[in-house]
Structures are given as structure tokens and as C-alpha cells.
Length: 607
Ligand code: PEP
Ligand code: MG
Image 1 (spheres, rainbow, N blue to C red):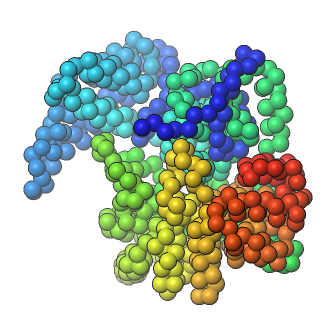
Image 2 (cartoon, helix red, strand yellow):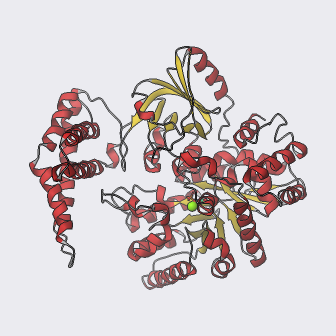
């Protein structure tokens, strides 16, 4: 069933506007670059004659790599493995070696002068169209195998040097954007992003905000509505995508753009501390995913790195990085933190993200083998990561965060592994540090067992993005139910309070590090609930800091009291708006009429 949100379309003055959800604020005008692909995303590149032969070589190389992978999968040497498994890979080998597939790909590159990725897309679409015409039966089912093989070649095409340069002012259009794709574009950043899928707390959009790239989401079949090279505009302040924007629109967007809050690199904080009017100290740290951003966080005086999501530091398309690669990158990030505390989270990955298997993934990845569960299920790889963090911690204030803790045994086993790795490092005279160990609190089980968790860790991080998702059972990446992803749900507010109260009673630091911490609308609420440590993306620091220094802690306690009787998220939101208008009209202007937090945000940044 297709239940995606459909948004109104208007056609006026030669341009078409589609209403969309804002997921990273700002505006941009540029040429559309349509992105395709599942694991590795790509777009059409027109080649000149001199680029054809190197492109054919790239393809040959990828075909060889895919053939090698399939040969070993077809003879796995695993006792007890049913023949059917290796038979499938035998069929895939035949497709790659005996069919006309590779020949057709080469012809497409030569004839149409296109990159290998685009050749794979067009050729496989032709193959699949032919399969669709075959009557039901065994042969028809082979289309799945062809898709698998082409996906494997596509994955094998990837290597660092092959990342093509985006055109200037590129507006990426995609069904869904992968965080790894956005990371590839880090140095060559697009002007805007437009997708069909994803919501405010999707990782790709967390990163878009971190990188300052305007983005809108929720546009059904967006790839069918625009072609690469066409002029489009993203209005990620009011929420629309505009095809063929006319001069007047471009002009007005340009003027809006001057309102965009720039990332300030002047120091605005001292050790990350901001005081409320009545002197309550709140520490602001930064969530970062790149060493460069770590340096920026230090420049603006943040209280260190509150969350480093390690899964975005590496290219994981071909598996997990080795110890030296991890060690060197962690060392670079630790150096960039320049003596400030830095919380390194171990990989928060799903099995689908690291498997080279091209087949169907887990049915429920958010409930599957991910994060600490995946790490503990592959202890050798986990030891490699922990060892590299321990080594990079030497002489630095590094702390280790364990994601998705739902069972105390996960903490206990990790601590045993760390201890045994420390012993080995000592034996081998390798220097290492003694990081504090903390847990992400982001599932209901962790909230309910918070006292037990606090017995075994030195700090906790409240991951509100996942906490909301798991508490109210709403997929954070599913735009069609985005209105049900309610940060102000009474269950969320109560959970935050339970965790903050328990941590205070135990004398253990608790850091709020989900997107809730970086959204100014929630700042008074979090402070009233007892938060004293917030970690957020760099672009949020200015706005949140302004709010903190303009409010009194005593008022935030009154605010929390005022919502105690709320039964729903909308009642709470309404009460917050009333309270804000009365107490802090300068921060939350009085012209707010609807209970719409995006409007609040817009008004804040104009001040
Ligand atoms: C969270 O869940 O709130 C969090 C900080 O982690 P992530 O967004 O990476 O899941
Ligand atoms: Mg999380």
C-alpha cells in the first residue's frame, strides 16, 4: 500500500512549486543532479572521447572483482551449507561470464558516452523490462539474479579516486539519500538536497544540517519529475521545491538566503559553558562526524565533542576498516579536539550496511542486528575498534560510548573485552589511554533499567532520536508518519526526566545528544527537566546558546510544572507556546499563532 504523504502542487508564472517538509533550513538555486542506486549512489556523467577507455578499464576492474567475489561464494567450503546457496552464486557467475551483460555494458559506455554506473542502470533496466514480458515461471524469476549481479558490479566500481566532482550549485535529487553518499560529497558540497524519503532525524539530514546544506523531503516520485541539468530551487525555509524558478522567485530566494545563520567560527563560548540568567551552568558540546568539524567545534569554544558517530568516518562499502586505518583517523580527531573531552561512539551500524551481500536485508533493521549487538556478534572486529580507540586515547580525554544498550550484559561484556585488550597492549608495550565508558540511553528498556545501567557506566548519553522512535514505535526515517514522531509525547518527556533524575541521584553525568538538544524550541523544556549537558550540531549552538542565556532556570521549572497534566504532545506544545509568548516574547515572538515548531525556529533565527 502506498501511503506516502502527497503534497499540493501549484503552477504559476511558468514555474511549478511542490510543498515539502523542511529537514535542513536554508534556500538554494541550482541545477538538478538526479541520484540513483541503493548502496552506492551515482548520477549520469557525460564522457568526452578521451574518457571512454579509462571508463571501460574501470568497468573491467569491477567485473573482475565481482567475479572473484562470486567464485569464492560459489565454493564457500562451509560444512553443512546447503547446495542451493552455492548454486545461486553459480548462476550469478554464469550471468557475469557467459551472458551478454558485460558486452552490453561496454557498448553502452562507448555508444552513449556515459559513466559505467549509468550504463549499468540503463542496461539492467532493459534486461528487467524484457524479463517482465516473459510469462510467469522459473526464467522470469531470473530477473532477481540479474539485479543482484548488476548491484554487485556497481558496488565493485567504487574506489576513492573514482568519486566524480559535482557540478557547481548542484541540487541533489534522490529517492533517499544515504549518509555515506553525503560524506563523499563533503569537500564538494551540493547546494541543496531534495528527497522522497526521510525525516528530520534521518542521519542524512542530521548531516545536511551539520554541513549547512538546505534540504526538503517527502516529495513523492521526485525522480520522475525532474531531469539532471534542469534548473530547480529549494526553499527549505517555507518548505517547497520549485521547478524552473522564474526571475522573481530566484531574486526573493537570494534575499532570504542572506537571513541564513552562518556558522560562526569566532569563539562564542568558554569551555562550552553558558549560564542562564539565574546562573545555572549548561555545558554545550558538539556532535561531529569529521575531523574538520571537530576543529571548528574547538574554535567556537564548545565543551568538547559530545558525540562522534564513528560509522561516518570511514568508507564501509567494502567492509570494516583495519586497526591502523581506524587508529589514524581517531588520532586525527583526538588531535583536532585539542585536549577537550571527546566521546567516541563505537559503530552504530546495521548488518546491511557492512555486508557485501546484495540480497534482501533484514525485515526490521531498526530492531535487528545493529549497534552494540552487531559489534558483540563479531568480537574480532569489535576488538579492533576498541583497540584503536584505546591507542588513540593515550594522553587525551577520550570517552567510549556504547550505542543501543538494552541489556546490562552488553556493557559487562564490552568492559571485559576492553580490559583484556588493555592487558594485551600492556604486554606488547603499546601506549594507550583509560577512557571512561558510557551508554547511549535510547531504547525504553534502558530507561526502565537506568539505575542498573548507572551502576556500570561513568556517564550516559540520552539519544532522543532513537528514544522517540522506539518509545512511540514510529520509524524515524519514514516521512509518511512524520507527524507521529512526537518529541513532546508524554512518554518521551517522562523518560527524559526519569533518566536525568536517576543520573543526578547517582552523581553520574547525563548528556542529551539527540536532535532535541539542538532545537531551540526544546531548550527551556530540557533545562527544566534537569539537563545540564547538551550536545548538538555546530549550526545549532548559536541559537541554543542565545536561548539559554536569556532565560531563568526557575522559569523553566515552572514551565515543566505547567505541562505536568498534559495528556498529549499537542497539549504540551500548545502550553509551551503560551508559556513562551508570556515569558520570553523576545525569543519566541508573539505572532506565533499555530502550534508549529518550525515557525518558532524560523522566527528565532530572524532575531
Ligand atoms: C540518537 O539516537 O538520538 C543519537 C544521538 O544517535 P543517532 O542519531 O546516531 O542514532
Ligand atoms: Mg541513536
